[in-house]
Length: 97
Picture 1: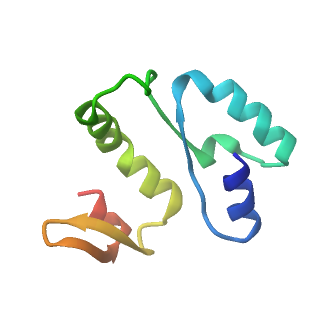
Picture 2 (picture 1 turned 90 degrees about the horizontal axis):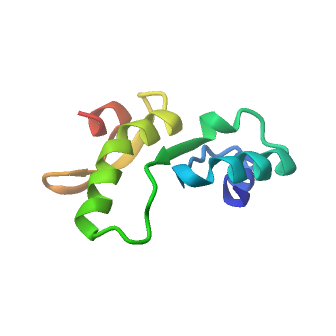
């Protein structure tokens, strides 16, 4: 949450990716850091994390990718995105398809 607070204070969109077991702690820290609307600044992935295989983590990442892009962009902002040809600068909405 400290990183989110820093980037948001610099005018840069930020999104914390949290394990679902840590949302209460994130809310508490966000309040202490003066962040408003913390739910809009967080994406939650199902707990657990630490014992997951790389494939399980990739599946969790795939499921939340669109939510993270949506939280950071309005659909017209250009972002780096994995595409079949590698990393490419594209519109955010293209990353979600």
